[in-house]
Image (tube, rainbow over all chains, first blue to last red; front, side, top):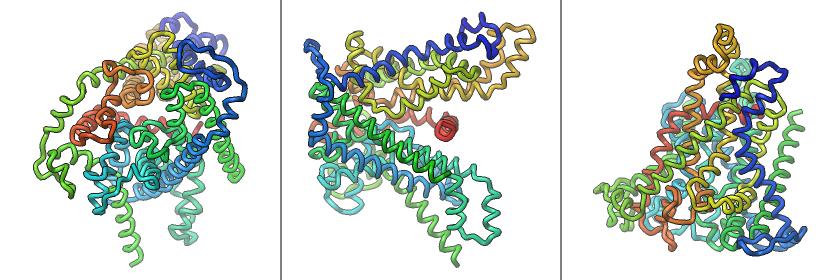
Length: 295
Length: 276
């Protein structure tokens, strides 16, 4: 703060150096502990770095990438990651849009639903994971209690991924709902009145006014959700640790195991780079299509 | 007729949401209050017949919850204070100057969202190991500060922007120095925003799991999320009652703080999501 006192009042000229001085304290840790490691991480993807202290590290070029492409476990985890990322994002969006539309109206349960819709947002992901383990528990679980079944949801080869996806949707719904609700409330009321005069029903109003008006919000929140979901770790780690038999091993869990269980730092970094490329490609394609359709 | 039908359908849908959102939470609460006998019953009951607080006592007996909570508290408070102390001047500069540095900083806020944590966490672990910060709360705090920083900057920048420049100028003209103007006029207006950002930093750190998992290896230094996971034995869930009780306790601080800043967080997220 002392730097402030010595500078002349922040005009547009000569102020940038002062501004930079003010930003430095925040930028230094970010550079040292975030940007730096990120670049170093990309570099690591081209090495055979191991976790041991004494091993020599050398450049191996694209060797890791070649190995990744022929690694069946990677492809399986990659497939699971895409299924998880896309289905959670889409289901989250549809469920949140429905809830936001309901909350936007004058219904009686609205207050309760609003509070509930925000609670998961504040809960530690670890607690959410543990809570859903209780729900899915084969003996003392809520789900089997409700349906009178004896299913071990999280250990069943075909049910584990869908079960985990439900938790993902539950976890991410609050943020998406809140953002969509705010978007809905910003739609000018006159637009609705204008279409109502033309005799449009609820469906037409939704299709011709609400959706187009919401578009920027929808594009922004689904993109963010997709990125967040594909990078998810804690929730699934607590729920299944990637099991049973790797059926819920998302790419981040795969990378974590490679790095911190087996010590293959270089290989895990390669995986990180590969996932980044795919995420950017999917996101780029989506944003490009949206921009083209909007134009 | 038709409107009655749609109204009924709407209520049904809303009820469905309430059930979906509330049931896991209620189950957590119900499990926390059950006796072991009731937990073992084949037909799990919604409402415990003989509610007990024994699980809460057991939870403290089975794991070092107090120690873990204290360590989490230290890291979360330190993270919040350090982040805001470093971010405040930067946010001020970002809000008042339109230089290249500002654009780069904001750009980074967005870019940092895309990269998978794993790409950062491996080299970060190597750096921390070299600095002998692995297995220390200081190491975890440094990492938390770094990763809370972008959103904290974003939030604070918004609050500074909401303070009219004219107010500052007027105070400066009145003969007060720049620093006095800041302290007397701007600081009080910024206070609510600073509090919100502090709470945001606290919650983020209190809830964080992956970095803690990688950086803290010894039980003697682990934070609350790591200790919670210990309630799940290697063979799956071992003791459900204490686990539920401990989970509930760990959620309380986040929930209280979150309730306070919820609105501010929403507007911050909206501005971030839409204006880019």
